[in-house]
Image (cartoon, rainbow, N blue to C red):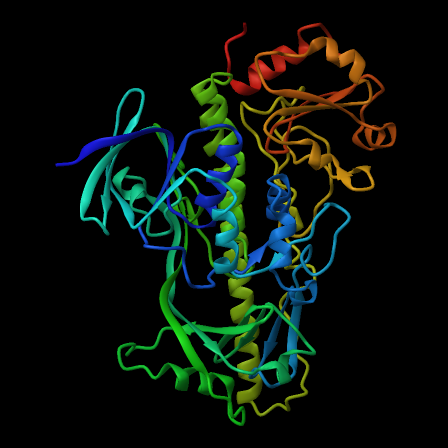
Length: 522
């Protein structure tokens, strides 16, 4: 018989990057957290390989960006290359914009790194309890809490944990999502794939033309760590039980390669493409792959999940600490569900383009065209830039005050990003000092950016965490703010409200914070 053995504010289900990042964010807010992960340890597989510029902004806020970058590849690896075999020349290539070189729109640069290199850093970033080998098998929602039934596979025990909220970050094959009866929309499973982790000396073909991934008609190759190691991934063979994996990798390298692959690990997985119909069911919230499983092309899956919890955790903290009403949590789904749908469309389109390139090349070779033949690409060099989708996300919900009542304009694609200080958008990056960005002013509080901090200091709201920061005139001008105007920035860095000039009354800031947090006026 299972007995209750713990009470926590938030139970996080899933110990991947999304769950671990949520744990670190919530601990910063002083929220009591328990994280459970059904596997006995962190994943030994490389899996996701890219942290985009927005994710690194989040990790800069957590003080982790430098540590993560130190273990990552150099920026020149932020490129994809297409080849007939790994030891042939490129017939197509594309850069990962915002990762291959700094962009003026951000104080950080994205990185190419393997998930198994990232997760230990995230695990060490917080002290909240983590239980490995513990799986959520059932849950029951009550008026003021959720009771979760947990199975400890190592001890053979079942326990119950009572949590105010549950954050399900338990992957595309989520246990929690079907328990809640939440369906999905989208193409679904796109096929079965296998990743083979191996050691081999491939530097003679790659050292002078580094890449995060090399696509070939025989599967894809990816360097795993700056000090060495490789992965091959491709369609899963029919007979996996008798597969000779060193031979599979050797044949994928192509004739004449003469390379022996020392296989270390093999993992079979399904490439999914769907978005959950809902991200919330009462006191249970979905994030990461549990909420949206995205094709790996473009590297947006894990990054979208990190943005989920960055959006959600300050709202959970506000409700738990009493300066926000529970209704604020509805803005999580309202804001993030449309982003997931747009990102799904982008990643499916990216995948189709990759298939088109490889198909055209195969047709060329079958037609006997020389290896030097030019290939007309179905994309422009800007297609994979994606900054519009990464930095240009605009939220439209009750947690954003637009002044004139019009919703923020969402990005229409993944490439173009035009910084704007309109409500709902991420606050643009400006350097306040040589090493301090506007984005560094945000944290476990609301931030008021204004050219006139003395005047606005008279309007502070003691009920909610708030800091006032001076905004230099040159930046205020770029934001369209007059000498007495202000921008109210939410803890996730998105603009909650703006005043082009002085406040209309002494209660202006208080009423804005009240509206954004869904709180009753005090």
